[in-house]
Length: 98
Image (cartoon, rainbow, N blue to C red; front, top):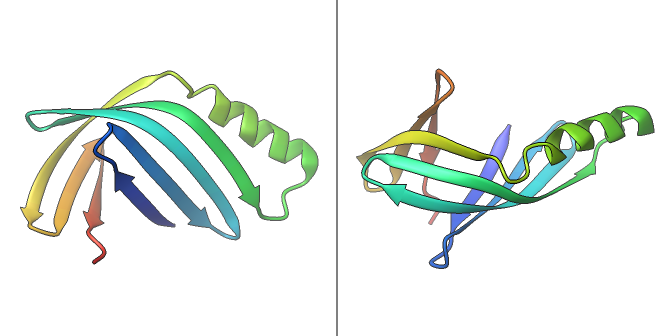
């Protein structure tokens, strides 16, 4: 899975995830306090892929359930362009694209 994540100065996090021809785009509010990143899903859109309509509806319904839910993650800078983000017993590495 690939992801583009943009943090705006207005407290919005814009995300685009792509996997197997499916794109999930979303907007989240975010705050940072110390080493904690808190996000709240605001909007999500799923496009692409060849999912059967019934499965597409199921996926969209599950994603919509996440709207308004606050999630917290721990993060640390590895270097000026790399951040490790940990949540739900998983760690992701995010690298800045210049």
